Image (cartoon, rainbow, N blue to C red; front, side, top):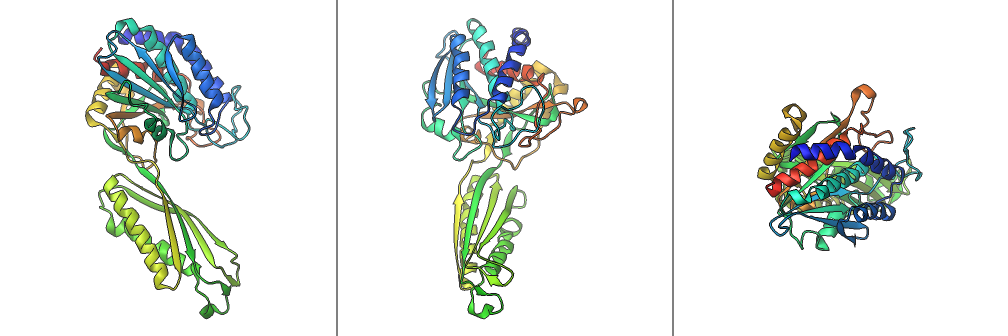
Length: 395
């Protein structure tokens, strides 16, 4: 089967480059992927693949039936949204939507899944089972399109036995892929802290309750959450990236200070405990100094856990399809991905697709205004995704 997939991946590669460039030129922000969804739907309709649209607003779920379609179902997922970034590339397919750019490679994910769907549709008489292709909106924005599509039933009728997702990875050269079983990516929560006191003249602090000093104490104390309360063997990050006071100046103590940060870890039980500890610590410090603290935690994506058995199988199949020299082990990442919602519901494998080319200067990281890919990666991406799906179906 791998020879047939390789042949079709090579045959469809020029078309898939075209899909990717079209999507790159017409990026849309999270939950606004109207034209992107229309493009995906048009491709699926042209190939005679049945699909359901309008999930979570702009999401689609397509079904490719092989022989004996009720035997087993495997899902493949791609995200479709772009980022609010002004592109600095000068390539012919630069974004036409000013201030919006596919800087995280979701155009690649969508195009590669379209290519995989086309391959699988051409081979539907040669495999048993069903492939569910999920084109998901809003990965870059809470609560994440994955959670909304799950809520709307994307993992039912039929229910997948497992799910694969791939993500661009500029540090890996095009043609390579990376896997990691078990814990892979962190949960990510947004922290919005408001410290309230009593403002006044900076020369008469005895008449004030200084929220700046209180906030400073809270910032320092909260780091004990990582250094003294977290298991040293468990990755945990607590970072504050923004501090702002309302009405303060060199000679004015403000009434209020706002802090914004992020908390990330790799264990859901510790995550819940840490939320309680952070909130209690901050509130008690503020109270002890005469002020008050509102500690708002916006829960983000959960821990992304790659099912060990499924991921080990996928890695072995990637070696079979690409060769051992093209498959690497990935390190842990404290970044987050809403694919994690799927990994909380069924066996999941989220792997990395190499897209870099150092010799050609294609090295910019994701979420930068010069991000681009070596488009030979699309042939690898669509072929491997199709191959993994069929192998997991037992074909």
